[in-house]
Image (cartoon, rainbow, N blue to C red; front, side):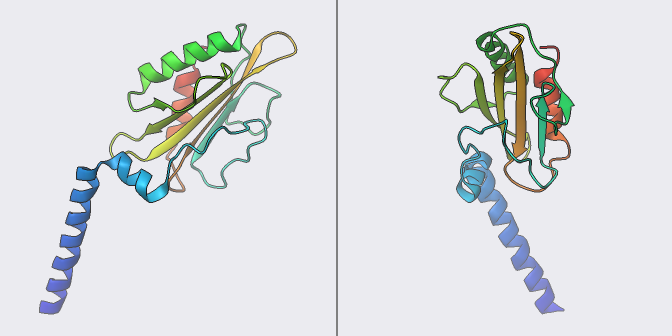
Length: 165
């Protein structure tokens, strides 16, 4: 019995030390050190394969893809104008979001954001696609870097960002 109590105490001490290091070093830095950067560069959103697990969300304008979680209507505005609106909306709605693309392409936005408590990283990529009728279509993809389940966080995030564009 005494050996069991000592083992439990040692395990508890290790967990406590790990938690102290996690919070002292920084939650975002810790995940970056363990899993690498959540930003893997620009994604081809027309061709990207969905995650096999329930940790991503995809929104798009009709006919751009057929596997979207919800549809975004085509927009009567230039891609650069829509990108500026989206960037402002994302940054206003999500104080943990950081833009990671270089801003050179006005039809593409890429952000990394983090869950509030544990700072699990998620990547958001948005592509604005000129349509034949002069309007602009949207493909938005959000995925968790860690884990197999995001409890619908990325779907809700995209709905918030893309609502009433």
